[in-house]
Length: 378
Ligand code: MRU
Image (cartoon, rainbow, N blue to C red):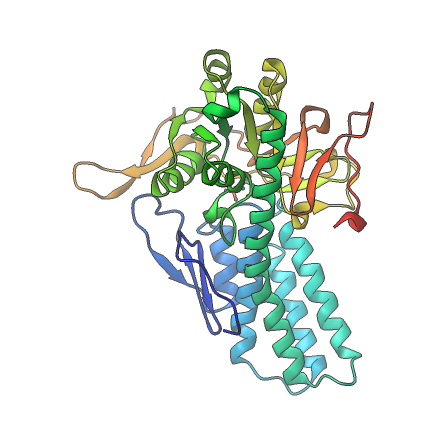
């Protein structure tokens, strides 16, 4: 594949032109199995069933690469036929998951690219197809670059915030859900800041929440932290306030699935309560997200569609049976109880100290409780 080099570290997505594989996150941390994605249908299914996940970036990248894979093996008689094919595939991919906006932002860009090629007299159908494939491939590289920038901006922000003695011992951070290599094309957003702090020897310790009901923290973030030998401890979600009360935690850093223009942020369920406890305990609460996770069209968080998932994720749990080493699903709650299982919650902007993007750190408008995120800043 033209010029793109993927790193050798933990990869959620392996791609070279004509070949796409995703690390099946339903089997992690117990079995590292890569599933082949050969069609858009496969890509849709992997996203819907959460074999690939991570809200924002990873979903958008896999959706577009699944399109690239199909385009690569298909021929079109003319650009109108190519455009029709792309439109149909993208409108199907749109139905895979509702909350993370990266998917919709990417779909919008691909649609307008394909429409523009229709009127381009220089590009023939083959070249148009190639340019669409290249656009999808470029996302892998761009996402990693964005994450590295988020990592440096976020770690610098915290280093400036804690100029004093706490920095000499390194910072202690609490994070939620999974925002690392498994949730992105590599490095990660919130976990990217943690990686950058660790690389600069400014990290003392990371606490990660289990992130019930799906356990992205216990299964995936813990896996990444152990894999990279970052000093870390797992806690249950219900322990966060006690942790802030009793240990010297310097900041909470989370990712985002959709950030509105005013800064209200949808992220994994449980994020909102962490922002409240951060405010109560007087520590910074940072949201780390690339601009692809910003929905400039939404004024505030009440407009974000929140995915409500199957109650069985709450009433059952999947784990490794230590007896025979097999993966098993166990019931863990009383039959007949009603279950509410929203996948995300919205943290209001006034609880967020700063939003760290690939272009820099945004803080709230002076004397106001909102951010002012505009497309032209990115
Ligand atoms: O596991 P998901 O796809 O349901 O959850 C999304 C997330 O991983 C996050 O909410 C994450 O914190 C944001 S994006 C890197």
